[in-house]
Image 1 (tube, rainbow over the protein chains, first blue to last red):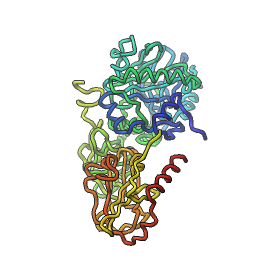
Image 2: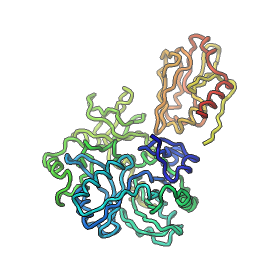
Image 3: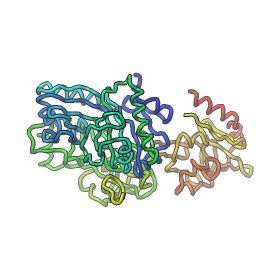
Image 4: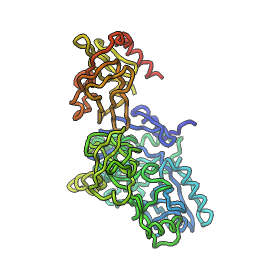
Length: 377
Length: 135
């Protein structure tokens, strides 16, 4: 099957190294994962995330439909407000994680993982039949760009008349970026302050419009050292921030309660898919839980590495990498509750060598110095 | 993206991008080429063989990792490893900065000098990587 391309493919091809990601030919890195990663942590970076899935849910029953398929209440969202949530199956297993923005009283905009584009859309559509709501896949009609890092607001403010700093975390707004009207949200997948920008009504035939928009932001960011960022650094950034990756750290066999996402499950709202199973798990208590691990010796942990306690396997890493900021190995994995306590000493088995590690808090970095809540920017 | 690669003419090469420099008659220094380090990019961890290990030509005897990839390094010749570059433990990116100098990997006592005849010279290696970048 031929790989899909985003509008910005030509830029990626001439400036980066390409890989197949969820059926898309996307840049893994341009400059190098470490330099790109540090640009976002310290300054600012721009990502093409057009490959992600997007749909519009519209109609009198839109809020009811979403409240039935999402674990979080989005009927109480204000217009412009977004909420991070998961969508579960009847067993409470996670179908996907996503963000739902309320655009109008009866109109929502959903953004979900590239790898789940088809599955999510079909799940939403199937459930929509029982509600007075229509679902439209707009994945191929919107260019999506993320601008992330402590300087992201400075970069975009250079080219917008709206006060971008007043947009609250997880809220969105229609603004002009130069002469282009866009929907911009204070969201991201890096742990840093930043924005995701949606260039509406831009089908794949409008490559030039997308390229021009991308170059406008690159130009505005030059004085702040903006870099284009590939999927390699996108992964290390989210992992340092302790954010789960669908397919690695969560899937249809793990529940939000086990994946440190209890805060997106609102049992007090009416029936929703998976509620019964999740309530049962809540009252019985979870057995396993996602924990963060940091290596105390040299080595690079990878997904699939065994986690050992006293020589016995207690779980496997679902994510793992060398942290470009901290300069040591970090990872995530599900383990029985008693091993998930901070400071628990474990070993990670890498190519049959055991490397000392310990359970550590996430985000992995010092949140006073890095991330969107940092002090003294 | 177009890259150019440094290929010193006083070294010998393997098709898997290791270089060999013969020193004091029966010994050799081994490392990876400029092409290999550019492919790997940003080496963050190197696992070297232990001293005394008997390496066999063509078999994996070291590992270099970047943030996203794990690459085997194959011994270009058979023999006993008698010294490893311990600097790489704390500064693995020496491989990126100086692949032919400070970024060397290990020294090996050559078992059979005839194996050296099977390695490529710099011209042959240059053709080899040209062919790779075309494919």
